[in-house]
Length: 550
Ligand code: DQQ
Image (cartoon, rainbow, N blue to C red; front, side):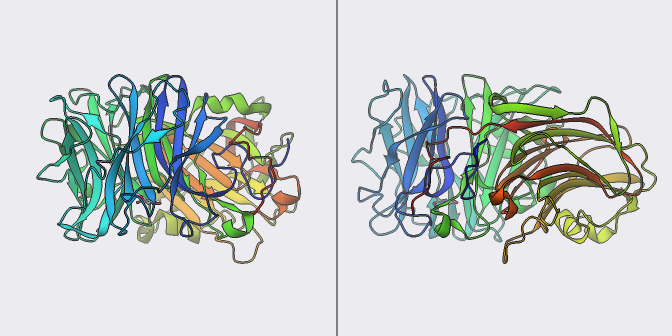
């Protein structure tokens, strides 16, 4: 394996150089996957350039070829930047992009662009009609917060709809506009969602249907699939500068209303379910008509401020298939299966093995700086579980910080140590810990970065979430972790709880890195399954192995 170097990842999406942020307009069209992204073609920071839409194509969501920018800030209606938006494939197969333009007066407006030649498999050229902006800045919107159009969907009346987040008189709202021709848009009187006043600014909305699943049904629905029995919708909102939250509910495709499946969580998206409990932002999904699945993209930015020195900043989470869990309330996310084409050397357990209290076992034999690890732990005995201090019930992240991987417990902490230096001075821990609470058990999942790097000033938080599992009934807890040099993406409980982290170990740049299972609980824990694959370096925009010139 050739080390990509310079902190770059081996199979996560990044341009060859410079800055990227939000995923924009992902789609599958005529046999190819298209991915666009917020891109500063002039440098490695967000604010030094007027943003463009970078553009890459792929046949497999793993290997990517970079094309010229799809959109650059060239017109009065986007002179100060082409901000986030989405792609919609119109009847007849012509793709359209709706995006936010920062106009010549720095006002946020919504623009449309059409693929110039829909028969060009690469969709290289995009034209912006002169009737732009198609949606000007509304009079009741405050704070210049009016942006990020969703993919459009068609109601049963044949009209297109698009959702746009806006601060309406100080209230973070999702406005819906309707159109018959994709050019003239009319706003619905009522927003589809209005947050409490504490949440004035929302970003990057996503509204999509999911099959109200029977256990194990993972098929996706196309974005315009009609509402009805067996269909739910997911409303995802990004809370400004914080994180992505979602609510499953019932969308009425005549009235454009959304009724949450969990009304008790209220209208503040901060209290909705989190898409990922680590560091991930501005996600966007699309329907993959080739494999009938919904796929999620999401921006994972740098946390060490090192972009300028490296000449690039920002990666995308590895694309995840996403579907509704059998409980009708949670989403399940799982790396798209194409990742398996990168699997090379495999190591695993022939039979279940115990990890004793205070023990650690190395998973040796693969290059573990770019790896895919699946492990299942079995808890033989819950008696030693610590009692959960009620102050932590609503603060799993705080609990993970207070009880890190090295703090010995009753049942757990047990899990993986990844990106570990030989002397263990550096390591990132992904682990579980079981507590007694209210006569039941609660399982905590943590990613503990406190030892992830010896570099001075590195950002080393702990991330945490409680799993929704019944360990008394089902004594198994599963974990899958994707390791890729400076990112650790973990999928707990079959992908019902996800946690993404950026880490900057110093030893990794110098060579080998180590991988372990560990147990700092009082009793033994059984590893009933473990498989770890070394992953090949994907061809990502031709830049993954090239030296980066700043
Ligand atoms: N990033 C874009 C905006 C969006 C924000 C600008 C979210 O359109 O609201 O780069 O990260």
